[in-house]
Length: 354
Image (cartoon, rainbow, N blue to C red):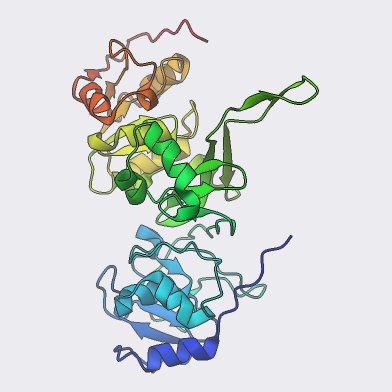
């Protein structure tokens, strides 16, 4: 069933901006032009008059700051996204996850065909002074997804807490829950734009039906914007300002490395050149290899390819009594980080579990 088009009330957008007391440049006939509250650059934030789409021509490529108007206006007005959404669409509109905070992230608008481009001229911004690269389009969560902190996400939070992931950590990483499929949802963003997610089953993945037949379903399902899979890392925002990265396979492993900083996940044993490029783009100098013990082949390949580029360190759960990082407390994962060994380029990695 197709997702309903977002019912933006353009007159409500006009009234909200006109009566808010905000200072803006009104000489542009296509957009309202503001100083960006995210990067602080003068007259770089454009909110398009005809459909509300916004973009900052300075920090769009750096942090993905573009999308639906409520995310920009929440910062400009110092109000929650939910409050601005009610004003623009009416309180009955629930398509945007109602996380009541001033944290903003970009989403894709359902606009008319051919109108969802971010060309400077389409905003009347041919003189914006910034040339932006092509940014990810971004995805919307299904309507049933809820924050694990919301009442409808309580089962998801219970699962996370059972694995040693606190509500505070879940909130900082903006984890969601799918109550229909009973899966915890871990977002994947590129430059701040939601480009996909991994959804992990909270119950058993195998069972016996009424006829005595063994049934199963995947433990993990990955949804990703087309073409983005090999060019993003999960929790990439953790690389901002960090000279090191802790590279793990999955989201639970990465969350357990929260105390280490720079914790990201590759969504599998293999690490693509595009994902390594994201490490380069963030200026990573030290790379801690935290793949599961049975990923010896993939770890060996990383060492051979990138030993001359990164200072490589090897994190292992060996000797901790835990099978992998996802099974251990965060404090234990930090001890593994502090005790990591510098990788010799000729080191051989072996696994007897494959």
